[in-house]
Length: 629
Image (cartoon, rainbow, N blue to C red; front, side, top):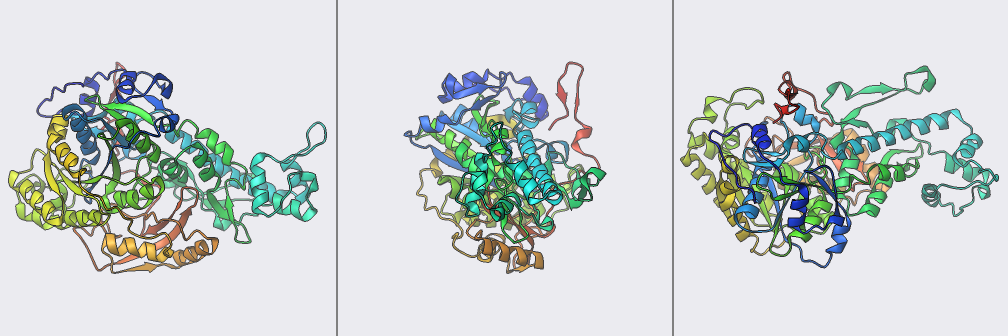
């Protein structure tokens, strides 16, 4: 393994990353047990891992499965990705364990916006961090292309149905070949079956059957599918399409979401193999017909094409850390508006490769009320995997904020309260950490708290955090310095995780899928967030009734909620309780396999601040990226 030479003070993330010389990715692949026929090289530092690895190693025992989550963060982030990487460097480079880090691909939204990239930081990073944070192997671009192809298919189908007769529409959908013989495309047979038409010869259909087959008959106001792009652009939240004269007056209001909020990203994160992905993509519901029936991607004939666009994206990307431990990067759904976890496929590959005594460490986005809740109730439900241990990352800075400290704003200097010793303020904020620990224990999983130490933290403050974590039920709480020292700074955390994984796990879900939509929402709202009740606004009531009638009420719930509070109010810090949780709307990601209620004013397309991160990003005279964080 590579030996770090840590400097003090710690240089910038990009300077550390660019000073490192990655080994050829084939060396990482060989070390983790991948043969040359089990991956495809993307240059010297990245490789796509083939799906047949899961089947080839099907009889191998799984390793220990560790999920890293966090307390409710400040807008600056609390180093959860850094802790994930540091823990893996500790396990692999210092404690002699086989390990695989499984993380999400970052969106360009936060990279060029406020938060920056997601490669970790300091001496605990995935490298090359520029490639990790920018484009990688193009998976998010594939998702963008697939998503927007489906959006185009929706609008053009409505256009052609509006401007053609039944006969003309059917004849163009099933044109005769040179011999005058018509045939259905394979994807059309699924629509025929859905309509109850048991025929495979277009010429055998009656006039009425031809009309039913040809006309999807989308109700424009019911369309839920939006176009996406992977940058923060608030002015695309609401737009009008179809204004050109060639569209013959078929204008309608729609909007853009950020690419990582696309249902196709969620499909990538939750799928288990290529056939499963094809099925999920085809089953995505984009609208309703005027008769109230769900309209899917396969109804529009585009499910197969979407799969073709995603055929490379389904393969995880192999990279490395600063200490040459392996990393699988795959999928990138946000946790506040999507499932918030890396892919099931990457985790399953990792668990087979590390073996019985090894460790797969995967990260859940934002606080444990969001990313970890979805990891447990959605990801583990579809994967069939059970975590061995959960790590909750805490910082003195975030605890001070939750204890009543001054507002923390990205881009502004921290108030003196955050850089001077104040054990009382820390103690007041420990209620937030305690609730996250208690919530995580409800799943029957042992909890270790990782106290991510900053240079300004006092020993007395760190002692307060450790005591509070243990009182809340954590099996251990460890002060970590992986940002400054890499894996060596997280060795004690690694030992704590190894010990915790030996404990008995009595894993359980928070709710039963057989419960009603409202019962599942209220279980999360009351048992995780601390709400007293839930208020359903008229649009939410309408959608819940509709999805229940359509038979989608058996899906799990993926709440779209602010990451900055247990409540819908981002300014409500600590551990608020007794509040009413407002559900503005409920939408369905049927292909991905969940319903997502919109809590409060959650936006699916973020905006840029006054001074975005892109001000610092440039390229020097030698072609090196500078200013990326």
